[in-house]
Image (cartoon, helix red, strand yellow):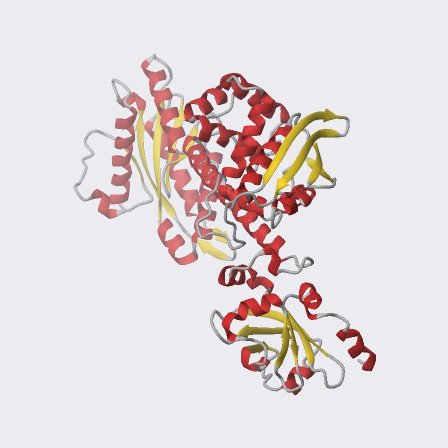
Length: 196
Length: 346
């Protein structure tokens, strides 16, 4: 898996649970304390053992860990901004989610985000199909969707309903597009946008 | 265009036209703005675009010298570059097309590469761009690339540090491929330990190039590098495989000659090497002339081996050679004294 994704897991562990937890996980996986290089691609097996070690260390099921990672991703201002480019409101954001992997690929050609299919139903309901190489990736997407609903100020129900042959399925029901003010977003890049 | 075109245009209501082209301007034959798209109207804010003269609102920078409507008409179909005459002097690229008789011109504008500045200056949102416009994708890409570049520069810093560490640990001089100072110190310590264990003795020759600096100064560093490479070749040819040849400074070299040896043989070797240094070396048609001085010590001169002492004694013998007019080889003896100013002679 791409270094940026591995690095995101690393930064999530470090930011959420502290350097000690990261160092312990790194040691179990057998990687350097500095962790992953953002611009290198690592074998999927490393990511798998990283996730297993983190799940064990935190006594947290893998699905819940994935969802927390998704929520954390949106807390990184830079990534939140990139997500907000996806649409003017939450409905628009969901509607254009299919384009997200393509957008990411524009910036990092070998990023390897899972393909997302959006099937719109009536009355603000959507079915999302996520086809990733890493099992359970749909839970990351569910976390992102939850955090982005807050960001847009939308009230939405997000439910990861399991996996079929087509991929992981997430049901989204948008109850109210502007439930709260949401967080501000301007297309202009802030002067000091921080990194991961 | 013919008369039917006019009829067709009037069938597009201004709102629809504004959605298709949020930065269009309809300029009347008299040069006044009759209609403008919503984004352009927002950009101009309080300056009330409608009714103003187009060429008094926008300054055309390319093509040059457009001051009248007739000249603008002549530039129809060509790429236009223009800026707002008022602050913040936003720049645009655009295209003007003539409408039907008596209808004036339709000008469509975009921000081009200045889009990031325009978005900041005018607080534009997604809704200010046509759905077909890739401006927002450009902004997205700009931000995504900035994030990626920051990660990359972090990687470069780490690689730089790793490279520096690797170079420090390396044992080879990158230019000549000879051993470096670190490798020499390791080899010398080993050789000295072997002698202390009643192993074979060895000789050490400290060589310093003469006139090398003037080659560098007059013919350039490339010539200097060529000379150093040639010197390395000569030293390799004049030594045996189990000897050590090291470059320990810019133009300083040390040889460790293993096995029993006597002073005369080392002096003869040193003179042969110096004689070969003095043969002209040609670099890109230019002749480089150098020489060398040598200081020699033998492990057999010492009761107990002390690498640091050997090196400083060889240094002393070398400077005796320099003092005696260069191109010499001097064997260290305890009666060689160190003059206070010996370093100033180099």
